[in-house]
Length: 318
Image (cartoon, rainbow, N blue to C red; front, side, top):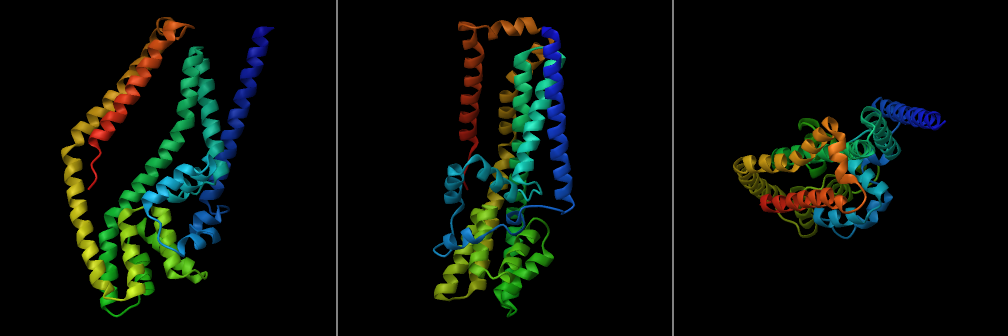
């Protein structure tokens, strides 16, 4: 009787996991073909941004603090917009839930060990978020690498006698992704009734680049007090190029140390998973009620503390 109940429970959870995964896949395919998607993901702004942008351009540091105060759903929506994902928030969480359930069931059916199933479920839940943040970081890095060329193109257009909005249109047409799509959103927002300053503020909020924030601040100051905007942007471009050159040199010098730190962090978890598969009874002795639980708790805590220390040691602000 107990076996039948367990089998029925497993079958129910498996069906639910497959259903959620298929629903997430279906919604993702619809989003990829452009049949649906959040308007905020297309334009990157709404009326609520307008009031915030009338005072001053919010810096990425201030945006990061505000991002931490947002709810889980709002943070997910901000990450999806920044990563230029076609998924909606609902589809994103359905995918995470489906992967967590599938990982739990597959690991439990394969090993019959609850800790292994919970670990697989945790990996299935966290993996989409890590992938989304990696995609967001890669998109930001591509944007910042091309940003000096954007400024050079703006400077050339301004020196040729064209207006700033027309220069931004040229950037949207000539530059590669993700620069082209982001500045194209600026042009589309101005066509929908936003002022150019507001559209640039929205761009800063979406991208989160310090270089972009500095440039938009200079443009807004120039609008208020006047001056030669082309020369200001040229100076900013040279400054950004020097900073990027120094940053790349530092990353090249510290590449071996960063790889060593990553290996040291992952090694205990990889060895623990291998031992759990090869000899489950040996590893399960540490998960018995009582003082043996202190062993894995201390190990995980030590690894996390070491990871934070290494991260702070290798973090260099340029």
